[in-house]
Image 1 (tube, rainbow, N blue to C red):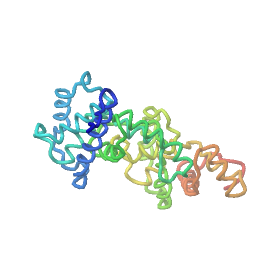
Image 2: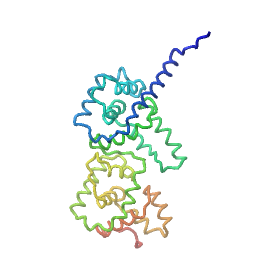
Image 3: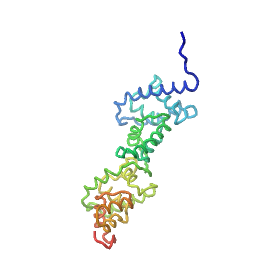
Image 4: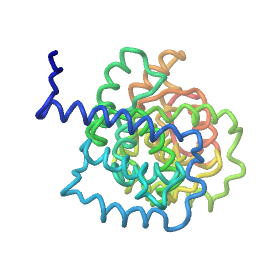
Length: 298
């Protein structure tokens, strides 16, 4: 009776490691339904996590970006040695701090611009780059990692940060919300000065201020000090950052039809929305009626 040959050597180790990866990944996320968006993380938890990581997962032994590190952390979180982090929120926070404390997966996603609204052709081009980022960071493809990093960034990582390169479509909600702006009568000269100062600070902090997606992300990002809570202030801030010379109004006055306006705005400004043109008109009438837009009336 012949005995079945056992795999040995590097191939055997790789297969065994891959099997362990799928087992521990499935086991780890089986508790994800209890996730509470990090709402109840106790003060000092992240500092405590960082101390433990440095103690038991040194980079020399568990290199970052390796499957070895990812597996070791997952095994620790499901073992009897883990005496502190039993709730899923604590476990996923520990995993993020161990594997990707700089949130390179989430920031890579933002800069890559992958969106469900993209066409199939565009998604086919952007998808592999995102997968590559995840694999290089985690050591394997973990498709669930991204969504937890996004919540972690919004709820836990409370440092002051202005992002510079966001290619993900973040402008849709902002542009649609502009229809609520009927006038700027509630904005007084002092508020306008404060907004202008914020614009100057933003332009210094952001390497790519003219990007509407970058701007819209930063306006809604709770981890910076812009504090633009009202759509009227956001609208003025956007005008002052993206189009202080009111070029959209100039384009509107010089073109004879909507298609021509749209084409030129996309070419010159990078986006088009009729309500943005409308709020520029309101801004011009209220704050700078002396500014010469064009020889043509709009």
